[in-house]
Length: 226
Ligand code: ADP
Ligand code: MG
Image 1 (tube, helix red, strand yellow):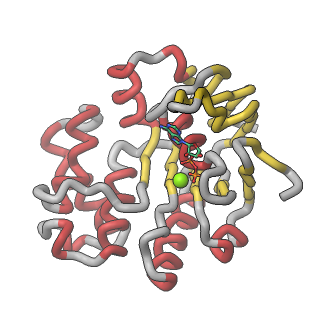
Image 2 (cartoon, rainbow, N blue to C red):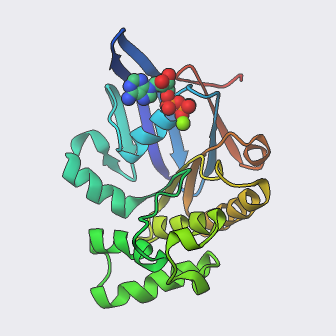
């Protein structure tokens, strides 16, 4: 099978006033291309920290992280930002759209940052993505003028801007009502059918039960019996 994520003996410690705290403890995990993986576990167990290691938003204390064939430890901050822009679409609980840009401009931003398409092609590409997530008619509005579910759709279109193979969400439905969450979830299912790999932290047991593979985290470890 074709691996897109390989983590080996990953440890993460944070220095605190009371000394160093180990937040991820000897975590190893492989994910194949095209998999849909849920990451579940109690609050404070290390789920966000794990996702941040995979997106390169944060770095491990020790251990190897390989994503889409790249060893993330080998990249400096600049290289990391560019690498992330091309290989990973990140979706957050609170959408993180830029409030002064229209929805269309928000979706074009990663294309501008990574220079993935010719300048003249970006607008049409972004509009096409917005149509794909059901927002074609909202493209010229500011994020504040649409609903939370629509903002998350826009954030998903933005995550898809550079056609990354991997999408990662940290509780992407955590701020949505259950009906809207189910619609966003259906969109994720569509994307895995199109060949994307998806790793999604969720608190929602019902949604997690519909995800083919569930990885449970407890006290910074991946546990197979919880
Ligand atoms: P989860 O997403 O599962 O709720 P997190 O990964 O956010 O958990 O956090 C795991 C643990 O690491 C928590 O105990 C949290 O307080 C601690 N932690 C997270 N970030 C930091 C940091 N920057 N400094 C110190 N401790 C942190
Ligand atoms: Mg978290």
